[in-house]
Length: 107
Image 1 (tube, rainbow, N blue to C red):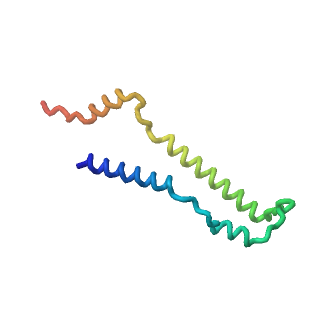
Image 2: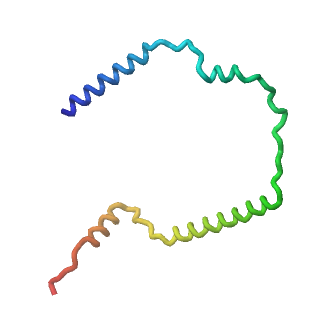
Image 3: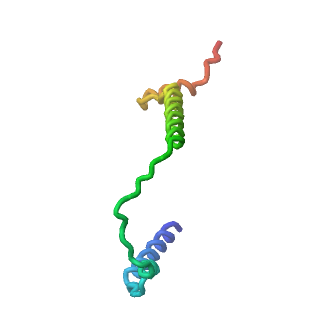
């Protein structure tokens, strides 16, 4: 049954690709062309305006930057405390077997 689905899917894909390849090109202008033609052409600005931030905004940005740096330092410190996995696969498997071995109850 899966082979029938695969062959049907491949046949439909080939049919769709063929249909797209032979589809006629659109000769009608797109809506973007109509919108661009409707707008009167304008001149580009001679410069980009330079807007300075006021002192309060700069103070807020500085405070937010300090908070962000402090949060980064806390996250990095917490990450340093997380034990790293064993890099060697064989060592990891040996430790996993050791943990999975039930205790000896022969006493």
